[in-house]
Length: 305
Image (cartoon, rainbow, N blue to C red; front, side, top):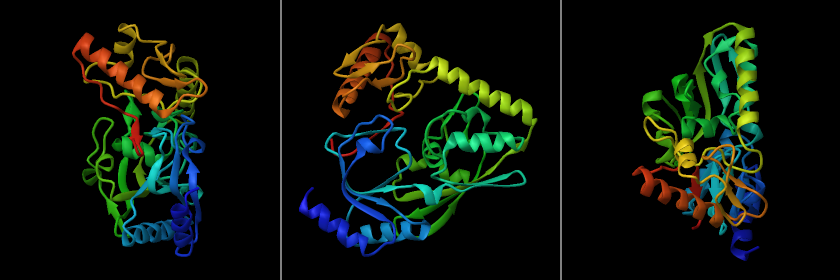
């Protein structure tokens, strides 16, 4: 551990109620099982504590970044400078009132699907088995060809970089395919959301969600990954392009393009973040040269590169 990070963590610990750690390995907190240390890792006690963390960071000119389950992140082997904020257990509320869903950003997305389908509410069943949290899904506007989470958002509640609470409309969030304003505006942390669902046939919704889970379990690779690495180009499938280019099975170190789905890179053991990034760049170059298509990253590449 570095002395400066220990001191930084000690000072922050005096200002908030949550858990604070210095030099926390991000390999413990990402689905890739990859990533160097965060200078300071914080698990806030609640939304007020989160606001206190952000306010403290800004007063001391320390950069910060928030994340959920680490399901869509590739963290540099060098780690992340500043404060990394975990949206954990205090942000996992799931509550239904009629057709409205009140949900915390740290809630597991697949669990939310189970709750809503069991209640006979439609609008999220397509998200069954999508890994990660509601907050991450909102940031990425996660979805499938069946729908996307931005379609049901009524309000997104955030903490701003000034430590203030605000409610944003769908228009404020600027949802479009695999995109929201939160991908470029890091000054707001998603705390919770209100979603408007619609009545549906409970048994049919449950069957649909279970069918999607079975299909994903059969068709998608096992092993540490971050889901789809690239966004689908308009009118095309990134996975199909990668397959047609003969890139399945291509590897750099222990990072491998999955045989089951070309848009997945799997950590087969001791892959580093540099291995994954080098492999992803190799795939992008090959697709550019063969098809004239520029693949855009869907996975978030963060940290000190």
